[in-house]
Amino acid sequence: MEKIQVVLGDITKIEVDAIVNAANNTLLGGGGVDGAIHRAAGPELLEECRKLNGCKTGEAKITKGYKLPAKYVIHTVGPVWQGGNANEDELLASCYRNSLELAAKNGIKTIAFPSISTGAYRFPLNRAAKIAIREILNFLKDNESIEKVYMVCFDEKTMNAYAEALQELSQ
Ligand code: AR6
Image 1 (cartoon, rainbow, N blue to C red):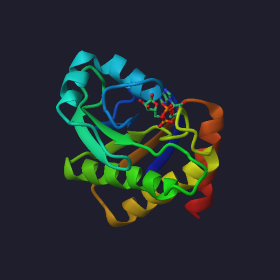
Image 2: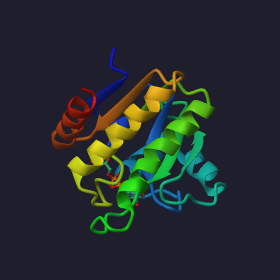
Image 3: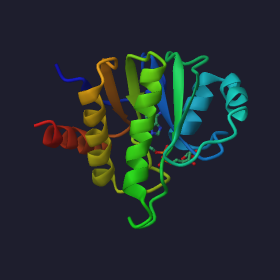
Image 4: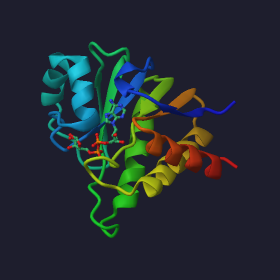
């Protein structure tokens, strides 16, 4: 049974132990998926985020999920695409790795990721999808505690990119 599932949908509606937020360094909210998560979770999420003192690019921090169906939110900060020579690939890989490590440490069994960095941060989609799937597969290889990882894509183009990467890399 495949532990990774690529789905089309709104990550704020997914019933999992944790959803991942594609946040910015302030962790104080923004547009895109970050805005949607804060709206759905309610103002208590921002209150907790204010106490975290931000987050470095590639790292991850955890909060409760408040009004979300998910119990936790793992906030990570993807790299802004700057052409590919600013360590973007490694930083994006770190987002997935650190989020999964933090999840495992907190007893999370099911987790949902959005397509980190491919919106406002302009990371090329197919390149991001390969990095994401590679990191998730690598993590699952050495970790038994996480049972299911959803890649929640907001549009079909994004879904196709992740589905293709999954097919390619899981062979
Ligand atoms: N569910 C799932 N995916 C979504 C949703 C949703 N509800 N809404 C948008 N997406 P982006 P980034 C997709 O821009 O590139 C914020 O302002 C979206 O279609 O949200 O990492 C932060 O505060 C795209 O495929 O994140 C940062 O400043 C993907 O989520 C900055 O944007 C990521 O797009 C982070 O930029």
